[in-house]
Image (cartoon, rainbow, N blue to C red; front, side, top):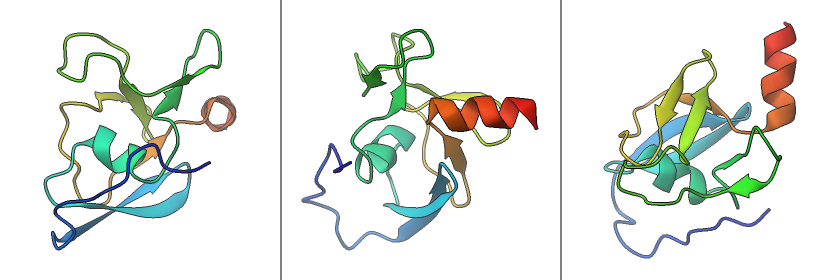
Amino acid sequence: MNPLLRRRYRLDETLVPFTLNGTAQTGRRGDTVLTAILSVSGRLRQSEFTGENRAGFCLIGACQDCYVMTAQGSRVRACSTALLTGMAFITDLGAVSETAHD
């Protein structure tokens, strides 16, 4: 799946490594979790109700459409959470259900 966002600015910012569905990725210093994920993926997450792809809605922290699961099982609001080195996210429903059964 092609990335939804294409980075055009801040290309020289420091790389910030993170993990998405078990795969190593990189964002840039100053990225939100939403920006980092959508820069490497065609969706932010899948709806837990319908399985449809979601990419966030309001992008200002007022709705709940951008919540993503961390690999540790907590939820973070992707549009207003700064990306930090070593963060790990699970956005694939299949991976979430497999993790719940481990």
